[in-house]
Amino acid sequence: MIELKYITKSYNMGGEVIYALKNINLKIKEREFVAIMGPSGSGKSTLLNIIGCLDRPDHGEIYIDGIKIKDLNDDELTGIRRDKIGFVFQQFNLIPLLNALENVEIPLIFKYRNTLSERERRNRAIECLRMAELNEKFANHYPNQLSGGQQQRVSIARALANNPPILLCDEPTGSLDSKTGKRILELLKKLNNNGKTVVIVTHDPSVAEYAHRVIHLRDGVISSISSIDKKV
Amino acid sequence: MMAKRNLRRHILRSALALLGIIIGVMTISSLGILGGGLKEGISENFEGMANLVVLYPNPEEGYSYFTKKDVDMLKKLKCIVIPISLRTDVVYIKEKNKRTYAAIYGIKKEHIGYLNLDTKSKLTDTTVYVDSFFANTHDVDVGDRILLRNISFRVEGIYNSSFFVISQNSVLLSEKTFKRFYGDNYSMIVLYVKNKGDINKIKNETEKIMNKKEKKIIILSMDKILQSINDVMNKVSLFLMGIGGISLLVAGIGIGNVMLMSTVERTKEIGVMKSIGASKRDIIMLFLYESLILGVVGSVIGVLLSLGIGYLIVHYVLNSSITMESLIYPFLGVLFGVGTSIIASLYPAYKASNLDPIKALKSD
Ligand SMILES: Nc1ncnc2c1ncn2[C@@H]1O[C@H](COP(=O)(O)OP(=O)(O)O)[C@@H](O)[C@H]1O
Ligand SMILES: [Mg+2]
Image (tube, rainbow over all chains, first blue to last red; front, side, top):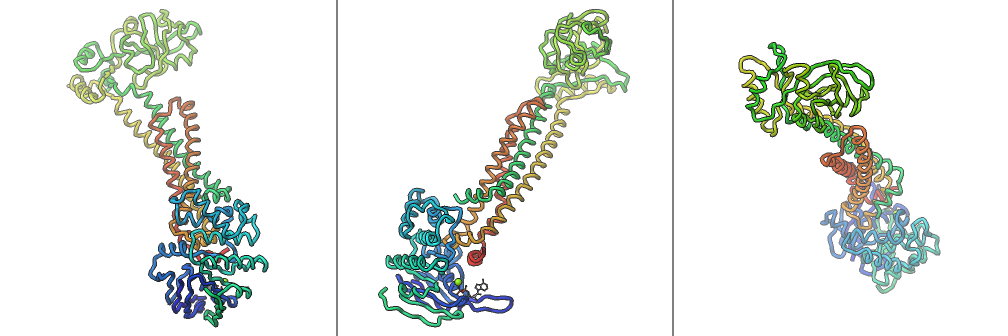
């Protein structure tokens, strides 16, 4: 599903070169639930952004669904982001002007423009909110009227909108209390059980309960991979 | 959907940008209408004159009037020859018991219709016409009586004087009456040429007939004068619209500014949209759509206002009417208004679409 080969990413900070990722090799299988852990600044976000085609590595190659990302132009990259990947952020990053339902409709608009009728788009968005287990009565609420957990559910619903095979979550529970965070992790696990490949960056050690593998990063290098014996 | 709400979110700023567009479009459009109205007002006054060629005796060669013989010679031409006599004399206004001077014109009754005097010809040998200036100054109405050389005439009508032919502060008599008082000579001859295209030909032939040996007469044709008036009016219109253009430019800078501020403020939002699958094109379209809304709304408001203002000014100040032709200016105004707002937002839109999504996501 996802394959990284010799990925290196460096930043030039005032003449000093900082390696965010060094020679990363990683394969993630379809329907796998992978957690990435590590101290702050160890390169977790950078890794996730590269998998999500938001960022390009300095060296190395990424394959998503067998597609060599290096060969794609900007538009094709946009297409991969839109169709294959759903992003979930720590800060939810909902658009404050739009209510929950409309936030979920946005990726559908980017994908289908006007070829999808307004009603059908709405129905799909409602379906996604249901999958994210947000009560339908919140559909018309604006982000600032929702709790953190509810907002994260909207953002997961948004990630699901175009039915991508991969969900990339950067500290999705980082802004939530532990109880709410646990619920979100349970939801992600459920989605994983229903067929999504999930890659999640987190500090929450309890993620081990859900993940097939935990990848530990340190200073841009994979320091260890712990497989948890579960069937994918 | 988002565009509208974004505009609403920054309602004050959007309103300012909108105001710029409104003012710009309004200026272009109403100045255009105004220019058109001005032109129309002037050419309404001159329109009927375009068919006229006016002949004056040339005083430099010692000629101060035309004779019956001159008139007869001109009758060979394919046009209507209108001899006009002129004197200045004392006029006594009976009702007001007032004595004043006026230009006294003599003209054949049947010729009045050709001179663009804005009146119906019902002149008889015992009635006179006075021009509106004379009527206003001396408070004279139709039906009043005035005395010329001690003979009483009824004021039968009031006309508007026409440039170069019948001056202001004038009284019009029938040719017969005029002859009784002042004799047989003509001060000028007006040629009415039915087809404007023949004016040059008529002028050349007149030249041949009258100015054979010496330059006996001066020939003045109205079409030339009208042409230069039109030229001036076009320049005035252009100038007025230039002012409108400048205000649109300012409006454009305003919109560009709004959009640029918007890109900076929405950096994070743009990053999010890119990460959930927005292409560069999507981002550009979002921004263009926002400014399109500003442009269209602003332009429409501007045009409506300008139509109102234009109508008031043209109707009440210039005393003429809005022509179909000048309705092109509101149209131009909308075109420029919408165009300006789109062009002004191109750069901000381009800039937004090229934001690095990761940096954009990190920003706050
Ligand atoms: N845009 C950037 N410019 C410079 N350095 C960066 C940039 N993004 C990340 N880094 C550096 O790369 C390293 C890894 O960052 P990141 O992947 O965000 O870590 P994590 O998500 O594990 O906290 C850090 O040292 C960070 O300072
Ligand atoms: Mg991070």
